[in-house]
Figure: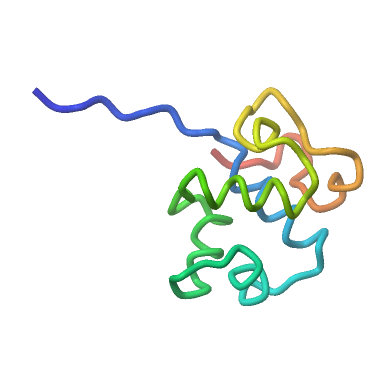
Length: 95
């Protein structure tokens, strides 16, 4: 008997990318700000949705952005307006 896959936030990768772009950081700078112990390419993987950050990293993103962590993981919630220009336009999102 295998384990079922857990639900993943569909918009998390877009939100993480929007945060980094709004903060005007490179992926290397973001990796340092997040105190990642792995290669900066982890940030790219988070933004592409090929890898999901652990909860501590999501918490650090939220603190850097000044938003509640819930806002990042709840697909029904959007980032504040100041991040809008950095998010995909409606209808162009990929899931």
